[in-house]
Amino acid sequence: MAGYQFPKAGKKNKLKKKQVYLIASGDLRLSANQVCWDAQKEMEVALGKAVKDSGYEVVRAHKLKRDEKHGFINSQADGMDVFSNMDPHAPVIVAEAVWQYSHHVLSGLISHQGPILTVANWSGTWPGLVGMLNLNGSLTKAGVKYSTLWSEDFKDVYFNSRLEKWLETGKCTHATKHVKPLKKVKVSSQEKKLGQALATQLKTDKAIMGVFDEGCMGMFNAIIPDHLLNPTGVYKERLSQSALYYESTQVSDKEAKEVKKWMTKKGMKFHTGKKHEDDLTNDQILTQCKMYVAAVRIADDFGCDLIGIQYQQGLKDVMPASDLVEGTLNNEDRPPVKSRDGKRVLYKGEAVTHFNEVDECAGLDGLMTNRVHKAMGQPVENTLHDLRWGDFDQSGTTDEYVWVLLISGSAPPAHFEGGWKGADGHRQPAMYFPNGGSTLRGISKPGEIVWSRIYVENNKLKMDLGRAEVVKLPEKETQRRWDETTYQWPIMHAVTYGVSRDQMMARHKANHIQVAYAESASIADKAMLAKAAMAEELGMEVAICGTRKNNKPW
Image 1 (tube, helix red, strand yellow):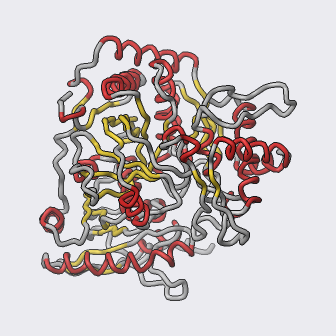
Image 2 (cartoon, rainbow, N blue to C red):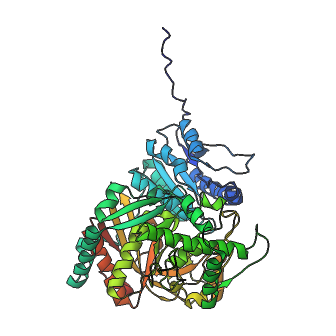
Image 3 (tube, one colour):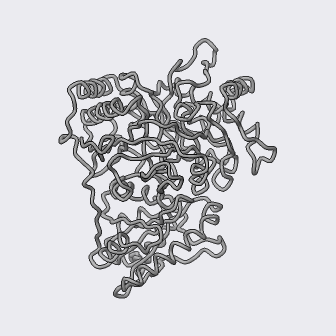
């Protein structure tokens, strides 16, 4: 009888004293990795110098992919291979100047036993900030201990003092005094009762979350486990994007043209051309209009209260982008969609709550926002944005720090200056979207908003909420910010009340942030507290971040 062949684990490379690993997670799309690689190289040089000045040496844990012309970890398998050769007890820095897929490195970081530091450059261009925040949210959900840092040039005292602390001790921290548990905030009986009543209704009558293929772009943090979601009264209907594709092919050309005609009659402008590879074409727009009709019909088929389309993996290879669809769904004033037999108008007069990139945390938040705002007679339109970047206003309009909130393609026109008349559509960037498709872009109107984020930590749903103002900036300043980020996408200029740049970065556990308008500052306060009360009644651990307007404490 032959003896057993016992496997041997791979040999681990050992680091010397005062050496630290550096890894860089990237996109799954080769074109994006190639375009963004120069920004990553520049960041790694600056970060490496900062580490060296602190008396340590950076050791890159994976080689450059010279044949692919970049140096990113570009798949989960690639990440596993990289970590199989790393000393599991050594310190590791995850350096991000780009959007990245967290699952490329998550398996290695979950099992890694040494100190972990996530670092991003303070730039909105590709953007590392968004990628790092996604990784932070994913590590938080996975229960992995980590520290995090960010910097514009890696020379500032705030960054370097904490970098030195992490290199010496394996930990660095940030002040989060702006965070207050809901139990320490006074909530009036009216808002508390409304939130509790809405929570009871949701748990009793239940709602269906339609998910078109779960798990988008490695966003582990965007998936709510069923055992945490179901107690809120929300249950997933797992749908396939192949069904959405098929249903789109069943929508007639006439119906698609009617949808586009409705949009243009409302005032939306499409920036079109003739070359499919580079331009937004009429055929791309009409295919998106078919997808819009198909999405509403499928939502009705399954009795969905909200839906989320993944798109960026899978559908991107066969259809134009879903963004025009997504922003339109989230708007009450939208093209009517009839049932297949033409006898019913589906979801008549209502927004069909859509959560971009199948971010289920944003979906649950969006459903709650819709119900709270509807009960209060406030605008129900809400959307997630990327917490993309921020900078002080260079026009002199305001002395406040102004965040750039930017979602990758669409927001509801009700949020824009001029509504549909303030909306325009550009072709999605080719490096991400080979089949193009129109964005639904605009400049968010001035006003009072509630911001929020649901996330998973310690096997529990949690929710942070805060207040902010959307400010109006001059056209030149808005264009500067678009040029620093992605000009094809909708933009919101947000000033958070009582939450500084570094406090937001230290606390926020996601790349996404949910926003909704209210008619005044006082009503926005009440809407936020009613939603907080609803979240608490649904079993979430709730915190209020920052202050009221004019720095008034809660």
